[in-house]
Amino acid sequence: MELILQTIVNATYAASYMALVAVGLVLIFGVMGVINFAHGELYMAGAYTVVFFYADLDFPFFAAVALGLLFVGCLGLVMERALFRPMRDNPLGGLIASIGFLLVLQTLAVVGFGVRMEHIPPPTQEKIVVIEGVILTWQRLYVILATVVLLGALWVFLRRSKFGWALRACAQDPEAAALQGISMNNTARLAMFIGAALAGVAGALTAPLVSPTPYIGHSIIVTAFIIIIVGGIGSLEGAVIAAVLYAFVHTIVTTYYDGVVANIVGLSMMLIVLVVKPTGLFGAKERA
Amino acid sequence: MGLIAAPHLLSFSQQEIAVLLVINVLLVASYRLMTLTGEWSLGHVVIMGTGAYASALFTKSLGVPVPISMVLGALFAGLVALGLSFPLFRMKGFYFLIGSFAAGEIIRLIWKRFTNPFGGPKGIKRIPEFPGFDLGPFTFDFYEPVTYYYFALIVVTVSLFILYRIERSRIGLTFHAIHWQDKLAESVGVDTFRYRTLAFVIASVFAGLAGALYAHYVGTVNPNRFSVEEMVFVLIWAIVGGTATFYGPILGVVILTVINEVVLRSLGVDTLRPLFYGAILIFSVLLLPAGLESLVPKARTWLTRRRTEAERSPTQ
Image 1 (cartoon, rainbow over the protein chains, first blue to last red):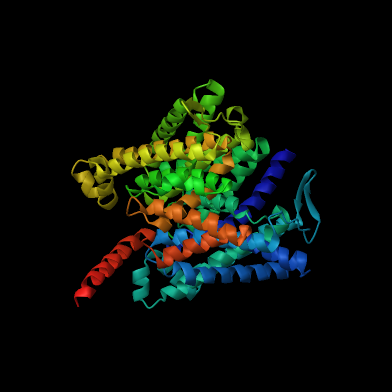
Image 2: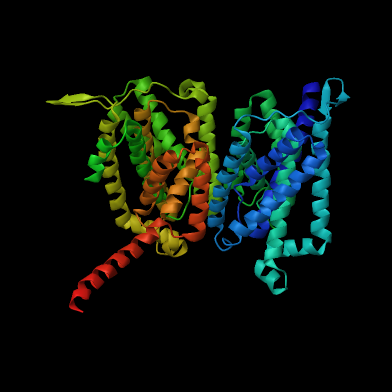
């Protein structure tokens, strides 16, 4: 019983940061039509911002997280301007360029911080005992709460604000949106900033929990791909639901078998969805 | 001639690189055959690994002689590709890209997970080498990079010739047709599924052969050698070289390997090498979208113009 409950608690935490990463990826795909292969490296960049400001320079943890959000968001702006805008009519070119950017970011992290794992002490060691034998550390709770707040804010922003309308319009039909006087460049910039910043925040918040290395982006991007395919590419709600689904399956299989089997199961899920229903479990009728 | 003389002018470590370069030429050329139908796979390196693992296991566990097991390994890679084609070719374009990635990653994780017979994360070690033999006054010891270089060069040249003939045959033309006009091709009675599968299987056989050449040269294979990072390099070679011509990807792999191994190595910036690779990739997509191959006709016209001008100038 304790094991089951503990697994559920762990899975909720995993679902949170996975959802942040995947939603950012979907947002970028929805508006710009490119798959950002460097998305895992944006997560890594967020984690290393925390390593730098919190662990090395002794900034308060949440200040470091905020800096991570801004820094990675700006990285997203750079990518939009330098890579994706010139490649707007060429999705494969954009994907390839993002692979190039991935290698650049990875190497910069290696040069700046070395290839070893960075062990960061979490800002608080306190734990919540849910029931006897089931614990949730505060650090994990921060991740869950931040995810709920950020995704909630994003949802309100997309539904209620003028920018949000413009964003969704561009995702549905770029030409018609442009005819209505919506600036494609501004919208793409906004989507890229938000998408990248979400990945950055996920990396920043989980940095004390995962011990980042410069190569951590690989497992992150694989996870994100599985989630956006299972959830239906282009569907933000689908990405959130798929993140929860995947996190539970992955955590349960990891707990009862091992991590490699869990990865095999996850990838098989994705392959089956691709074969049976390529639009994903939650369809792509309503995009972004 | 240059290719035959080359190894004798190089240092030992450069000879080893030359062997791997020849193997990579076959890998990237087989990848191009796959891209003819318009599908970009992210599983090609894993298919190469399938050939490597299969050939290694045939020799090590079943005692098959190395030359035969290499052929068997290549055919086995084709067989795996045939099996994969049933789920994968229900997808197209981007979905195929992601699907091939998932399939490849599953195969790679199976190697990693199951110690028997794949050796787990450490892979298979002490793979038997290609048997040496005496031929009158000549002794062939394939442990020597130079000897293996010639052997690989012959195998790869023959394979490239076959790949080239396939591309120029009616089958190859059908591949092109499927890429550019798949609906039209279907409407005139081309079974696009079967031709896509055919391209995938042929490409995989040659990728498997490249893997077998690799396994019996290096003597060890492990799951990380065939990871998606390695696949990224194949993509880079193909993209930077360009895939419109047969020689484009080969140009890409040769030039980038020379830059990587000679120029960057001599600069002594080992940790920075992926950064250079990434920058080259970005700039080539942005500035040279048609690849290095697009420079060849330009260079040719420039040369002929210079020549005609040179011929004309004395008369003026």
